[in-house]
Amino acid sequence: MTRAELNENFLLAMDTIRARKGRSALTVLGIVIGVTSVISVAAIIEGLNRHVADKVNSLGSKVFFITRIPNGMVRMTEEIRTRKYLTYEEALAAREQCKSCEIVTGFSTRISFFGETDVIRHGREEVQNPFIRGVEPEYGAAIPMFSVADGRFISKFDMEHTRDVCVLGRAVATTLFPAVDPIGQEVNLDGRHYEVIGVFEADTGLFGGPGVDQFVVIPYTTFHKTYPESKEHMLAISVKDPRLMDHAQDEITEILRRLRRVPARKKNDFEMVTPDFIKDLWNQLTGAIVVLTSVISSIGLLVGGIGVMNIMLISVTERTQEIGVRKAVGARKQDIRAQFLIEAVTLTSFGGIVGVLLGATISFLVHTFVPGLPAELSWLWVGLGFLISASVGLFFGYYPANRAANLDPIDCLRYE
Image (cartoon, rainbow, N blue to C red):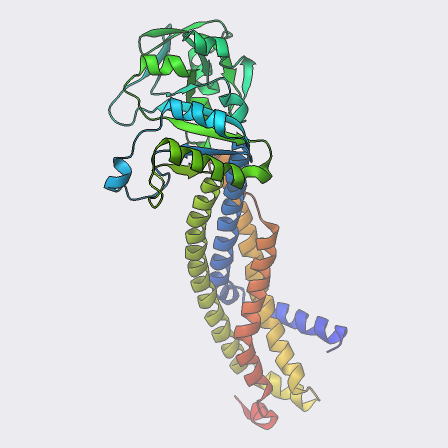
């Protein structure tokens, strides 16, 4: 087919679509719904994937954690619930013995999920149930996301003298000190007075959830003196080089198994967690979302494709005499077939363009009005959406086009 013939068939297709605007719009409605859902969901997932990746990177590529209880959606068996608590002494021993580890530091966290109420106050302002964490001076170096913006971090002197000092998350500091510099000010945390020595960089957390902004960090020794009932210890471990990560994990595992007297054939009574755990868990969730969206989109595209086939069959019937005249003046089968195929592809491509525009609009609105749910338009999915819509026209339009091409010209001319 020459370029001139292609242009002529395209113009004929556009004339047919313009002549039957209402019918054409209803025909491509399924295509529009399918492509819109693909583009909008893909944009949201793309934005969330980047958001999760940024959060994982903020934890550092050289850090992993040791916990007593597994993270994530894991069934809490009796064996897990009765595990021995990790101890500060084990953290100190691991620090001394692990040769491939750059930093080994213990920390504890108090989270008011089970009836306790923690309150930090300054004057008339207060924040209820912040995340209270006891840390060593090395903690800030091990986990980059706990970066101090103003003031300083917990020092060795603070630890050794069990000082009542604290570093506040940005949101906590802003609430308690809306008009003054918090550094050097005094706050009341659960009835105990602390001097504010620092404020962290802003960090809103994953999807707008709890992040560093909601933390109050105090010396590790002060934490366990104030909250002796908090027995849950964890270890943050940083390596000198990311390539040493596997070796360091093996080394820490061997050290802790020996310290905790775990029998040779028994499983570890502690858990090793890497930042990739968050990414892996998120990929499992988004995988389910992608499958669900694909099913919904496929239904929309299938309905749209059946509609295109139906409307093209009707169009073939309505234009039977036109087909006969074209064949009588020399049109070949492939010319008739191409004419109707181009019409079907043009129709579905138009639906794809509308779907892409609607999907982009939804993505923009989500990004603008729901900051906790980032959306980022994926040009890959824009191209795929348009390609899929055109493919639907090609697939479902072939049968009507082939039927038109095979009509007998004599019968077509006699058709009324």
